[in-house]
Image: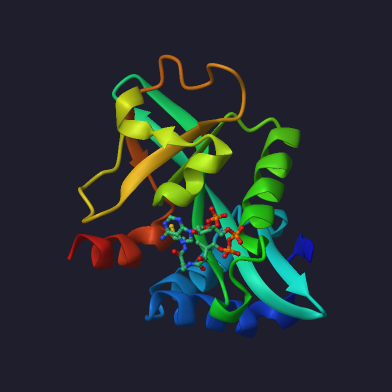
Length: 175
Ligand SMILES: CC(C)(COP(=O)(O)OP(=O)(O)OC[C@H]1O[C@@H](n2cnc3c(N)ncnc32)[C@H](O)[C@@H]1OP(=O)(O)O)[C@@H](O)C(=O)NCCC(=O)NCCS
């Protein structure tokens, strides 16, 4: 299994990975919209390749945690998916681990994710326990946080602010 940066020729496969995993195209539309946004960083869009075939994808985007007195940058992990027939082979783990490694190397301090218990193995904990909240409740999903530096979340409180491309997906989540 190789983890590498996305390339243009991967884009259609990346769409199919997310559309099949989530059963709708909200995530692939989000990824395509984010690619057009200023500040999009392809180094934070990674694929897992097995035997020459792209089988998984992960994207990290820049968000901020906003309060009346501060705006703290963080990365949000979204979306992550692996083709069903390739699950359980550690592609998901390798994609998250490599994303965390790159983020640390770049001096990023905080990583957020909306998601299930899969993320606990990397050290993600519940963000609301640190005073970091999503802008609206989402059924069945919680925000988790990973400190990429010791105590990086200390004193950070507020609500997550997303790039504009997230708006349609967030609206779908809230409905
Ligand atoms: C989550 C996902 C990316 C994991 O990919 P993967 O390549 O199979 O991951 P790995 O092989 O590294 O790890 C598999 C582990 O993830 C766990 N896992 C998968 N889905 C899970 C879920 N919904 N909740 C908790 N754990 C989950 C498996 O039980 C397995 O656990 P184990 O290592 O203890 O046996 C993949 O299952 C997937 O694409 N799911 C659908 C999309 C999705 O849920 N994405 C995440 C959105 S937050």
